[in-house]
Image 1 (cartoon, one colour):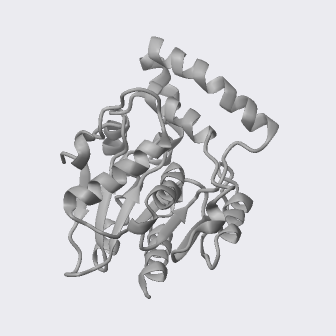
Image 2 (image 1 turned 135 degrees about the horizontal axis):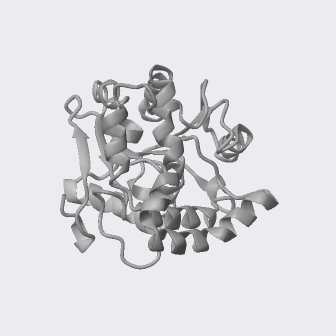
Length: 267
């Protein structure tokens, strides 16, 4: 799809849904691509909603990344997709890094957002001293990945690849992950480490549901619950699983996501 405003070309998977259905826009996480993050939910969501799944800038089939990675650009890309399709209002549905992008869509384009669904995410990612130290190391990791991309590719995305071990989807998942540019993903990790919505997330004024992964250590559950507590009227939908539950607990994750989307669109 050629985006409005000269923002380049991106991949958007669409499930038409029932006539007049609310529009949900799915925003993937850091080490995934659009289909990997969302393939289990397309059919169930598509039975009730018009579904758009967007590939982020700098990822396999997303717009070309030029310059510094900025999450704000990803938020503006989402609105450019809506502009291209002639959509006025929609529900950003973001997982992990995509949840930060969804928050920024509301921050930068509040009049376009009908509701928010935030999953496996929080308002600030590096909190502990150890996490802040790791985030400071990311620019060096980006440089190393550019020098030795094949070595970096072995490590970047390895956790996600492991989730598919023994699955019939494994060959497809490996091929999808091979589309990644490891240096770009690490650069997005650095951008995510600079993200904080703590100063403004309390101003969210649209129906919001937070899908909380109850055994998450990558984005600890208490931070996800703190995000929900900071948003007036936000509803919490629990799903029993860790950060990879969208792969390892597909049935539970899909049910939680559909419930969350219903909550923010039911009026």
